Image (tube, rainbow, N blue to C red):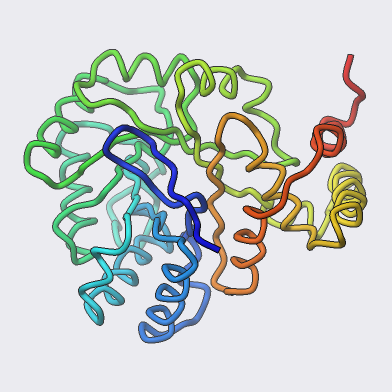
Length: 302
């Protein structure tokens, strides 16, 4: 099947499913193996790769850069998404005493320059501010966005884990439109149905990216009663939908929503990614969608 792209703004689209590469360091794949994986992903229509400067203790961007050095033409077939703003305690930065956030002009620009060097590219397609910060000067971030855009180093901008108020606050300072908000959405994590974000996305026509759509194993390998409850509902719906895989049901549930949720599928196993792609050809009833939602909430609707 041909995977249609989804427009985030008039001149920018990403694949309907994004490949998350946060754990690339754990896949134990050589650069050649990663190249074969990425070529297969692109062949399936997954062309958008999600990163952050901190992933893999500041190592995962460079792994993608190594792949791009093996096949330079691949860069023209993909969209690179990365994030900045979190400063981790790391052996790479021995002088750093605590984890904290930094959205100063200098840090954002320096972080992007480091990412470009690691990724071996002259631009990233989408830069996200990784998390909202209690100490945040939006004028500094807006200035960095403007300069990075003018220099051609970043083509589009967005945020991650922001609330509606935080999104609107930053938007009021930036010349560039914020094109998405990457937040955690899964049957296990319904936070953004409860904090107003989903309604905000619909109101503003913002298409959110969903990180950890499988809830980090809390559903497929339940660790508590909530996970067991959700898994039971998913298995029932999977059976009703001609015995598709349970993880495919989760992706169908996400894709069904009118907010145009874009799942970030973060696996190095091609069979697991295929389960996500298979969801594009499946639909579920409204009742089935609510069965999963109610299992996540733990209570019937009022």
